[in-house]
Image 1: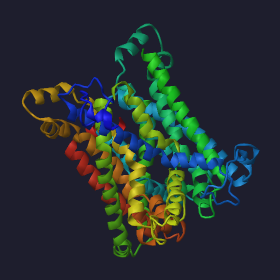
Image 2: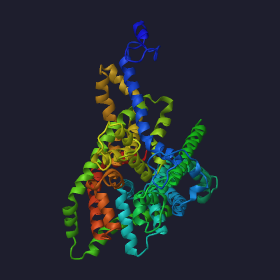
Image 3: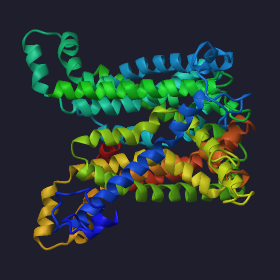
Length: 289
Length: 269
């Protein structure tokens, strides 16, 4: 270390010697600033990833009871058949998945139509509807949950599976609509006109021309809807009644300690979600190239 | 237009739901009417203020923490921009509740961080991070940070770098160029980020319950308790309606000042 400092190398005085041998001497300050920012970005990413790493790590822990806070020893047993040891947890997970699928299909179908209407047509009250949609997205979730519960109670609907599904469709809808709308804004109206000139009816035009063109937006919206639905806690907590979903189970069980099975399931969801996102972006890049 | 019907139906549905909160309030309490609001504000004023304070503090922290990263990714990220953004978004693939409880475990009084430090004598035995104001604000900052990085990044990414070079040509040094050119151009992103951060952070109750103690309850905790444990629906509805009114007035003033389309676009991007 000391020898390299003594040798008169042309490396910038700020950086460690040898790290940037070809760096021009006239701008050492900029390079240092950029390097600091680069390091800072990685620190931030590590901070963001820390709890995820903890969740994944403790899925291999071997605690005695349900309390899974301190590291005891390495085991793979929770990743095997013991994963389904707690029927409540398994049931909650299944609920989360089925609710997510139903809410995704319904909100994608409805949201696509809304997004198309917003993106393709001008109509009276469009500004108002934009504003309303904006309010629906930015309104606090707790207010959404509270007003939905009030709504169901007034109608005499018992909170449960059905109310969770309705609530999830309600909040996924605007997100799908916004995503599809962004895509529909780029549509060339002449293409649809051309299809009509060639004798295609409205349905055929939609199926063979419009839908393929907005398809990436629809897929993105559907993935977003599923992600929002499977993760939602605040709204679900209000309208769930006695039905449990995966986040609700975690919330309820956290006082007696979360069994490692929760970590395993969380890790699986994480890997599937991240994997899907990577797959999607790689495919998008390939189709663009 | 049948599309409009499909489009209008859910919106009316939504509108009626949001109005329902107010209706039920007056319906339940024919004689009391506004008393519930007054009572709510009177008894839970501190929680309201605390929510605004925690939400505001978390938002400011998010701006300070996100801006440098968004700046670096937008201008120096090169071909790896989307990879870095993906890494920033990683937390979204783990359940929100699980992430927060994970922090609770990490920071537990005798957990994997504080335990060894205490047994090594580096920290006093009664030192704790959980159940403090800092823990709640930290949790809020953690959970909503990506919502701040993204809009700032989008705004910065749109900046034509030649504008910055022009500033340099006009003898602005790096600081001046940043202050007079880059910062003003990125403000729409910051505004959108503030919106995306402050609203959920101020109405959050998960962080306050998991990471905070009895002295850190926010208005969200109260609303939840009124609904799910006390079955005091009028009070819960009055409180959530007040919260909604507070935030919506803020949002609309905000959107009006900046133009709805801008904020909507930035929020959607």
